[in-house]
Image (tube, rainbow, N blue to C red):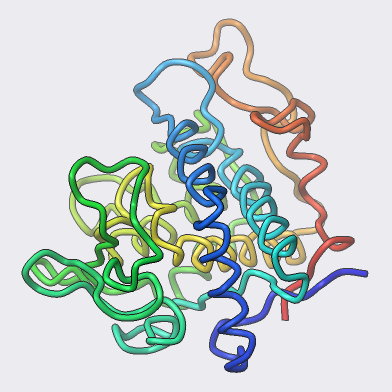
Length: 288
């Protein structure tokens, strides 16, 4: 029977505590840092060489769907009642709203060094030392709203812009494509600065601190953010039932994207599954 992922704002005090405790236990065991390392390893950009799976590619959505499921399964081995909640950043939009509360993720970083000093993931609480993808900074950092150059979270209209596009993705299958649901949701735009970040990318920028770059998994909000992104893919699938993941076939030998893009029926590293197999998760979970 499928379990339910809930809106984080609807969690009871007990559900909040159990979710936090399960995350802290994964961290204590060393399992959590393995997820940070995996995300760093698969953070491959357009300009690099080799296969792109996690970002700037059609497989952005199935890769993170599988990644999120892997974390959720680990949490449920600790506490079978736990599922990953989602954060609706089109509605809970302030620096003090859910999930930035003391009993969940803690709040913003302090002005001097952006260190998070409240909540269970504060360095001073003693349970959340950053070990992967960092240099000398061992504490979690955030800069909610980007104080030096204020930025707004995406609105419902920004999501609608992505959801209304019936095509999943389009050539050249990277960060430069201007049509297709995938990149409109992932959020690589043209130009520079805040105007070039949409939806998913803009949320990472709005949070700042540890959420910038490949080691963004160091901030537990990563999972709540990506659960909401995954929910948008689910909504898009329901709205455009005749449309599927693209490309259906790998780019040919003469294509600049040859060997760099995962087609619908090709395995999605590091797992032994294909995007086709990851399109329907209804047997495993559903969203409230």
